[in-house]
Image (cartoon, rainbow, N blue to C red):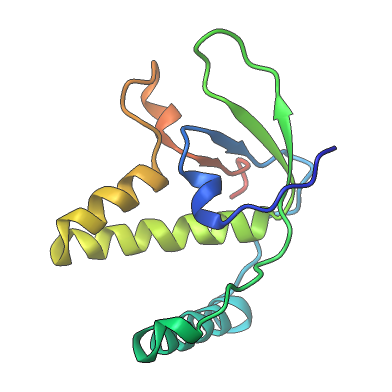
Length: 138
């Protein structure tokens, strides 16, 4: 195993599929216990960035453990999510929601968010566009 530091953006910049295996627990984030504190953190960080971008330090979001799944030929590079599925799914949902708001505000931001929330259109199957594959329960 090779530990590596990556930002959330780096995890999603390349065409890849992150599969949540069936043995992982279901997505359990709720509005009050997880989403509200996350939104408060994002708001605080955005306000700090707007006030003085030079003073904002990187924020550690926690570990994500991935296991590469063998693929062949031009198949999409695929990883099983061993740990961090709640964070990975949450940030994919957040970026997708942000992408939908950005379409009305700034076309350049919308294009960039589309690139990191969906795989390229050249893929053989339309469902390969999804970067995070939840379990059937989620």
